[in-house]
Length: 142
Image (cartoon, rainbow, N blue to C red; front, side):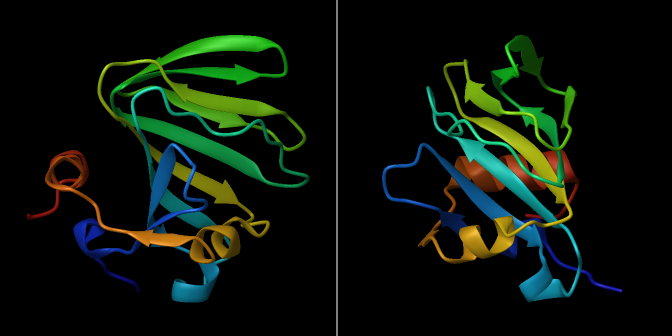
């Protein structure tokens, strides 16, 4: 069994110029699991770069904010409570379309190197607003 508090997990930005960052909840290096789960936080106007995964499924659960997903030429609006599942081989982008931050609980199975990419990034501190969403949406004590 593994037990953690989301508000105490490490956070990283992959590159300094990125407009999203990740609170690392579970990954192979830290927890010995074959998947990765993060809270992905998108700054206003922020987006993932276009990407696809050879063998991994990626799931986004919107915890707060609004966004737009573009997958292989299709577009879907995202808001709190929505779930987006991206199959392997599907080029996709998730973009924050709202005025505030967009928060997604993101899981990729199998990990396919995503955890290593994140852990190799730049450590960041989550702010009070991030901590509130993590504790409020995930039901943990502040």
